[in-house]
Image 1 (cartoon, rainbow, N blue to C red):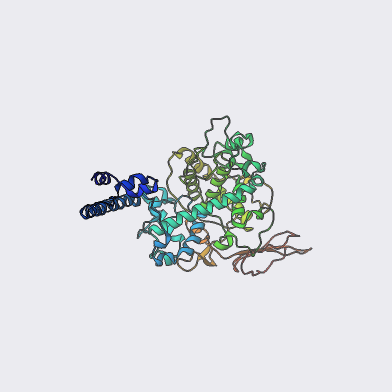
Image 2 (image 1 turned 90 degrees about the vertical axis):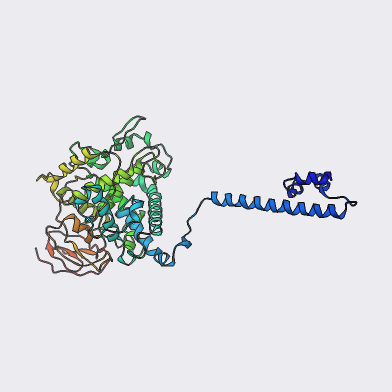
Length: 490
């Protein structure tokens, strides 16, 4: 019966076969002279062992299943949510570039309060509570009303929005790296290779206002100022608007648009989103992308903090947008917005707003910038200048003022569209931001005439024709219906 005791001590007979240990297995088999009782006993023991092995395998499988990484599958979402995937994706990509670069995950699953703080008001930055309320107000204003109750506030919505924003941003950065040399007027090799040692390039160090190996990056680096001349009073901050305009033009109309007029038939972001004016969020987005492309970071951080540079991009976006929203109606910011709109869209218009809190304390710099932007001067810097749409990288004075174009009345609720022009002489940034996001197209037309020239500026078929002593200018038409106003002889 020694063979029985040997078999009982065996853990797994299958392993003996698998490992080629057939001698041990053959010893466990009763010999030809074994009695019927011995054979029955042997079978019982085998059954018991098999049951024990089966129980052990089941326990092992339970452990493996519990330790297996959980993956969220989109098919698990209810059909009512999945049905809106295309709509959410379209608006989420636009949201990430024009409204909020780093949306708060916890706020994305909350519902808008009954009486939220208006997102387009400077009051949104008074407390953390007003910031949260305004965030939700802007979020729900941006996305169409038809998905407010059925989709928004769900985990599915949150995950899809984050994914679309990250994918769209990664795609834009990839495209911009290929033309960054043209944008910054530096060798393209600095940017084509994401791992290039940009921190060692003197020209880039000057743009950041740093030097040496230990580099501390400022919230308002010289690259934000005209001629890269850092202004300690911050009066001309964002004055180097051409950099932002080029980034936005390439992202909205394609990289070839920097050297030629965009093709009307191409499916550009501007066309898909019906975007015709910049917003505080889009300008802040462009400024952050400019800093990232010049930084030593190889990948844009999802957390918002650069791995190599330790630049807090999330905080930069928040501070830039806050400054733009609160000072949107100042003369200098209006001028910058007008010039960016002319460069990007070919016509001067007004824009939008929003955003979350950062970590570092830049209150002193922000306050200085706000005070500086409040100071209106009658210097020649305040004279309107119309830059060429496809000029090389130029640095113009930031304070170039121009009369704002009439804002547009909002369209159907939840549609984010506008239907007709409405003039609001004292309109604040709050109302401008809501109305100008998705608007009808404007047309600037100037007739060619040897003896007289008119400059007709129209807003969606209902504007004023203004006389201007200009000659030899061609007609520039944007998308949308074109109507001519009466011209006045000069």
